[in-house]
Length: 332
Length: 235
Image (cartoon, rainbow over all chains, first blue to last red):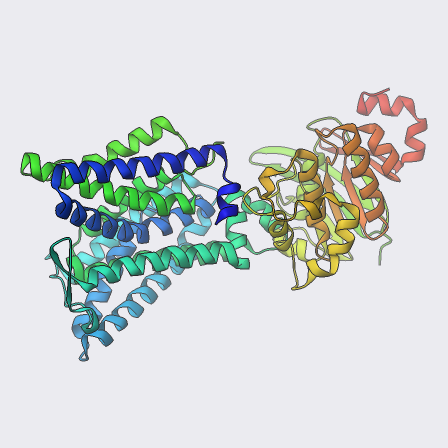
């Protein structure tokens, strides 16, 4: 950790400073405006949202960094994960914990296989034509959304019971909350650390990071980069699916959820710096907190959550004006 | 069987619609240093990239260790025993020096076996081992790029412009290192600096506008001032 900070570029050190100052400002404003308990609840909601966004954004960022593909189907992966998970959860006859685990495994595997087919069959032939890839993933997102609607119907699915061992409440900031919310944060943190360790401590991870900079050079060293591309695409798809399934007991499943999280995730990777993993992780929390505080602010003052969506886009614009390559991106 | 470890026979390579190589033939005997000479944009770098498979030729033949390799994927060609040190070095900035070397391993333990040899050639790298590649100076990055190609057992090294943008003292170090490693492996070099090229290499091939126009022993070329002037523009 110490060597991490010692080796930071001046630009990234400044970004850390800006992030810490900005989060402190958000918390201070919340405290002054909402009072201790509401501020705490808002911050908790923000962190929770940040973790969910991270699950979509980390895949988007990894795929963009290595493959140079802005994968608009990433939201559809979350959507399909959620619906397949919902399907498995509701059709099995077993305890909630078993059903929940089965939902996770089946949703993640289903979307992972779908990702593998998409990458090898459709995206791979277009690596020399990036614009076509964008159009392709955009089109696929639309097709997948329609297929989900066709198969599962247009009506939103109600939130499901969390698995038994999480189906209890605890009190935080004078509010009674389900342990399931803590579980989502735990899941997000586990993924953050897990992918971090993968990228920094394993050979595959080192190859991925090298490939983000120059995949041609990695190939010239004797490494089958295409295989790594597929692996990363599948990993990204699976992470999004996991995020989708995690959402089901919390918010249920709706056809809109994919695009909602896709937009948040795009904002996150732009703010964090395209292709930077640490940037994605930090920006996810920042975006989650910003949205939660803005939502609360507008509820308190305008009786409607009008600022929620605009706040993160404003944040993105400000970041791009201050640092065009994003907080932890690389200036080219 | 041929007498050459690498034979490039009349290759034609396109980048997009541009016909870059219009018939390049290069023969590299084992254990030698061969240099590709020619003006900027003549096609020297593209020749190296064609050999390693990054810009595969559309026609012609490339034979390495008796096997036809053109058309194979780059990673496959590299694994047959070719190390590539590209123009502008391209070391991985976010990875440490150690990781830059580890990534080049083709078998577990490659780096352990080669570490002593690498540190003898480039003692600086030992001191810089835990630093990110991006923090290294140009000369240090060049050393790392060459060292990276030495990690696996390669029979042929393709080295593109090792002296480019380096201070004279560093160029001397780099030349000494290449001379030493050439006793272990064959080298095909691209070098703009004729002084460097003529002191290092035994054989040369001149490439002019995508065509190989002359080949032979450097010792003969050095005597032939007219030829040097015609193709290389240096007296």
